[in-house]
Image (cartoon, rainbow, N blue to C red; front, side, top):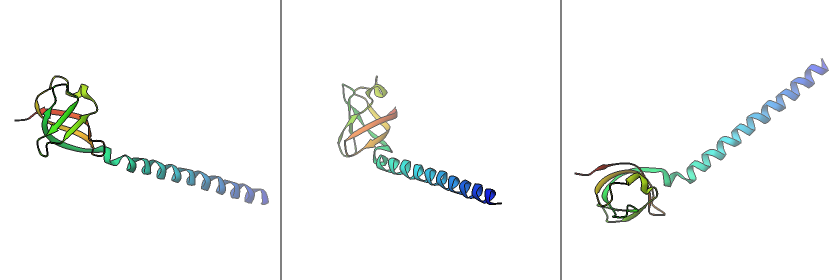
Length: 103
């Protein structure tokens, strides 16, 4: 009987330790995603891509944005387009997800 009690007690401590570790892992990953949340905001913006394909000027406020992945806009240099992109306003950068020609 004493052996069974000791095994149950040890098992209880082990399970609570595992549960605590999982809870800690969840809170760590959620705090990482909230730190990078501003960089992951997806927006549609219309404007013109520069001739070199490395920047974009929006029609709305004439703000210039650096294109993080210029390969995504290859072939559309100098064109008036609508971008769907992740925006990092702090760095004035856009990561282009897709684009289509504006009317």
